[in-house]
Image (cartoon, rainbow, N blue to C red):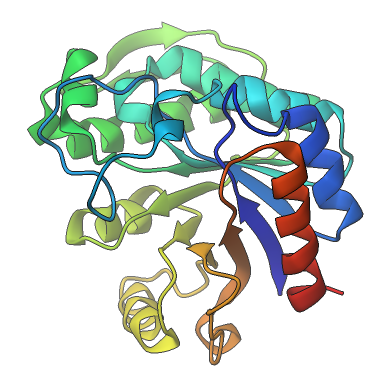
Length: 272
């Protein structure tokens, strides 16, 4: 089993240049960094988990800047977006950023994606929040073409371009796309566009249902990464049997001393 961490990177928390080496020193395999371009000051979309939206959601450092710094200060760590929101992003810039991160890190990029919970955030990007899932699907298909083809083109409802040149190409072919979420739409996205699944932490029985469905759909070997588990309460019984090969633990964003102490505690319990 591989073990990683989910950690918001903000201007008020531990620096990316510190957290990457700290993870490697403690035996962690991966870092997943969430993304928000901004948080609208007025919104109706409920915060994940309910209640007030934590401050760190509105203070995120750009995810690809963060992971590039981590890439430059580590040698082994898998560098994951957890999750990026491609529906809100320009398809060409995003394809280039993922490929560039994969190149400069020597093939360590992992592209975790989701449709996003914040409808007002999506609307600010000029997209209809009701269609963000379909837009995401098309952008994933288009990026796959950009990464694979020297002269890529794509013609869809939301993404449409004639033949283009776009380098660099990623080291991994393709960089692994891990799809977040367990809705019907997210699972179809996983089947059609994903190399891995990024579900919230749950019991092995709930994962078995998805594994059986993927097998019926001709995708029996999709790896599962548990996303944002609580290191103090997680019961991983049966995980390996259903194809979980990585567990990532939520770490509260905070100052360097607090984050390093939490990493020590998780490492002592799960890795060392």
